[in-house]
Amino acid sequence: MDKVSVTGLGMTEFGKHEDISLKTLLLDACFEALKEAGFPKVDAVYVGNFMSGQLGNQEILGAIVANDLGLGSIPTVKVEGACASGGIAFRQGFLAIQSGEYENVLVAGVEKMKHRSTEETTLAINAAMDNDSNEKHAGLTFPGFFGTLANRYFYETGASKEHLAMVALKNREYAMNNPKAQFKKTTSIEEIMSARMITDPLGLFDCSPTTDGAAAVVLSKGKSGVMIRASAQASGTTQMQEAEDLISIPSIRESAKLAYKIAGFGPEDIDVVELHDCFTMTEMIAIEELGFFDKGTGWEAIEQGLTKHGGKIPVNTSGGLLSKGHPIGATGLAQIYQIVSQLRGISCNQVDDAKIGLAQNLGGTGAYSTVHIFERVNA
Image (tube, rainbow, N blue to C red; front, side, top):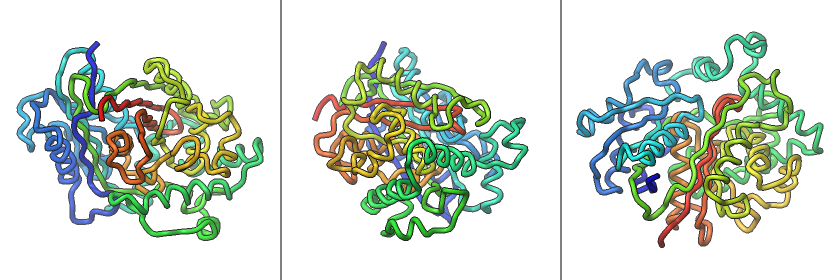
């Protein structure tokens, strides 16, 4: 199978773009990625997006990219996988080149959310739940779901809300150095702990925000710069009531196991990670499911500073979804933007001599998870 490398990166600033359309955000990120790659002949376009139809009455995003950027009559695809839309789109582009079908593929993700009310956006996000589940009928939202996981995790492990606050603080401190991040204002454990409650025990800083933004990459056949060593995806439960263990997210664990097997690496080989911290609790569980820490000990690792510079494994050096922002369709590509930048040695919050990086993107309540592993193959 053909080797595949990342040859171009593009990303808008994340936040509120009141006067910039979804289309413009998407095209800006794509143009930047194409320019960096040297404007190769693109064979196909994949766009990850979750709610452009619901919130913006706009579909056909792949065709818009091809048409407006003058890419010709090439195949285009829009990919929907809830919050994992970007990671799944990236995987499809990777597989298309690996199979020998294409030589260069443009993959992008975009979302515009800030122009609609919280109620409208929440309703749209809830489409990522099983509409026939008891949880949906009872009115459970995603903060409620992950709040339930947090309370169970506290009960079983001895962790506390303060450990969640440590995750939020770490990611905010990283975001302060990221010019593309949504939140750059300093905060403190005290402010985080006393913030408005969203759903027990998750407060305002424990929940990722709604965000406008886009990110894009160019993938090319060959081994150069930063190579994709593994692409893996797994599915999981769509209902909390079906979960065998409330402090696990099996789709993360299974996609990670498969990615490590494909790459020939283990958790001990990874130098830097971007994972899906839609809530502080999700980061705590994910560092365990990805194999960096034993089950039930993630909170201790966080308390000891093992998930930041100088620790065992720097996690979410971009600021993560919590502070960099979470434009749903763009999130998976933004994670990859950060990892590739780290491996190139040009990132904010640069990890010294980072050679191997991992990006993990989650959708729904664990319905989807993608894991991608990257390696710097030349300096």
